[in-house]
Amino acid sequence: MALNPASFHFGSVALNSWDSLPSCPISVFFQRNSFTQGFSFFSPALMGHGPRSGLRVKAYSGDNQLPQKRDSSLVVCFGEMLIDFVPTVSGLSLAEAPAFKKAPGGAPANVAVGISRLGGSSAFIGKVGEDEFGYMLADILRQNNVNSEGMCFDPGARTALAFVTLRKDGEREFMFYRNPSADMLLHESELNLDLIKKAKIFHYGSISLITEPCKSAHIAAAKAAKEAGVLLSYDPNLRLPLWPSAESAREGILSIWDTADIIKISEEEISFLTHGEDPYDDNIVRKLYHSNLKLLLVTEGPDGCRYYTKECNGRVKGFRVEAVDTTGAGDAFVAGILSQLATDITLLQDEKRLRDALSFANACGALTVTERGAIPALPTKEAVANALLKSVA
Image (cartoon, rainbow, N blue to C red; front, top):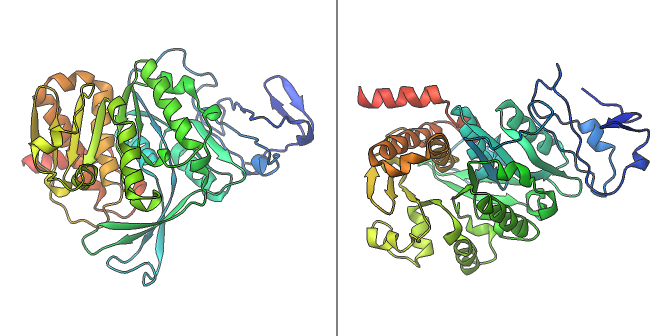
């Protein structure tokens, strides 16, 4: 549906020409109707005619007013959303791959969609390019019932791209195109702080810490969430090629470590952060546990996960499946556990129920690796339930 910019209404004020638009960001509120059906609405026609000096269109989902009190189970995910190009044949280099499958991705966005697929309430905050890929990603969020109030579009930068090499075992290597991409250019002034403060959990990674202005926006968002009593969830999601150096990556990841309430890391990330120490040694892992932390999770791929709280620790076995593409498996795991904690945070005080929730999260990760791409492979709650039933049959 195209919108005619000749006469467009912002609230009660009609603007007859784009020349009369101010250069500062403008929020456009779309009311629920038969076209938007209560979801976020984006118009390439509208945005393509806007001034390049900073017109920012926001789309508000649901009834045309923001909720006035905190959503008791909302998980807000902050960071990057991009396009993954996944080879159609595993075990080949990028140059040898005959073709690629286009798939939406980006760890925070994967988690947001994963939570929604599981029946939870989620929102995404980040920036994409004012381009066809950006519009596509916004539509993916809409289709998956993810709140997109906090999504912004940059008219001067492209949506990030990542080409993924799949080894024969399904593991990946990445080549990124972001010089800079739109996600790196999110400013603190563009943050939807009201949305952040309404969350039960605020989830983020470390990629948004690499460059300014996104780094400052990330720190400000986390600070606002913390001050509002929102739980902070952190998955470093180490991508070394994006950092200037290994040491800068280590320093950047650890710079916000002590503010998180929940942290999920992989075995490889433990080795990296501890300068090569044994990731299977509980004493080594405990060194990463800080006094404010409520839950530390270590993912072990098909072997499941380990968990550490102040009172207990243990291991929950995984699910054996034939891996096609491991892209998004960790994000699916995070979506699984956060969807459970957002509904009932008291799981952290009950080890048996925590273990059940982690088994659910393990099943989410396992199902995701059986298909190519991250978001396309994220499972529904029904699919996870069926996998858990089969595991005990």
